[in-house]
Amino acid sequence: MYTSVSAEEAVKVIKSNDKIYVQAAAAAPQQLINAMSARHDELRNVEVCHLHIEGEAPYSNPTLRNSFHVNSFFIGKNVRHTLKAGNGSYTPVFLSELPSLFKRNIIDIDVALIHVSVPDKHGYCSLGVSVEATLAAIENAKCVIAQVNNNMPRTFGAGIIHVSEINVFVECNDRLPGHEITPPSEIENSIGNHVAGLIEDRSTCTVYCYRIWNC
Image 1 (cartoon, rainbow, N blue to C red):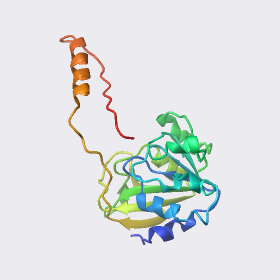
Image 2: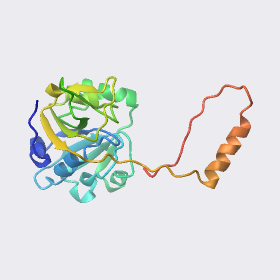
Image 3: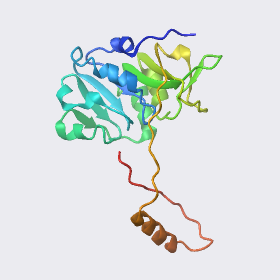
Image 4: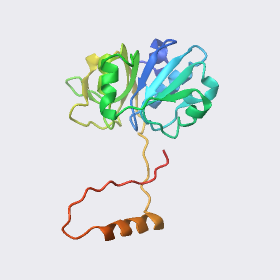
């Protein structure tokens, strides 16, 4: 159905001055990220665009500023330092509007690095745990490199793509990153009890739950 290569071989298509989109959150393709970052001596002025990503972001190291510039649409802990160090920037945009930046070539994507499930018998993969703006990136990128992971769950809806939409495949069996849910702290319980006391019986309300994450 497809031929896979190593991550190191796959990222050879990335050239200096390219714009790269990286799939977000727990679907960030870590093997492709690491392989791209390892080419820093060969690359110059590569713009890496993404929302928050889990895992490591070695390309965001300020010492690699000549090789990579980080363009964040959501600033996570692993790239927050780039704003102060000068090797990163923040593009404020609503998530719902991000696909239009790709479709209108306001951000012209050269390579999309994605992370998908193993294809089914019909050749369809799932974008798994993070769809966000990745479909638009795939549709508008000049090259799509997919990390195909046995551990990526199949989720349905719009996040299904055919192998014909992918240019380069890298197989892996990596665990997806996650966060352990810890019991609420005494302060969090106090806040919850206070808020609960403000809500009247039989009332209708909209609740926004917020918890401080290390991101």
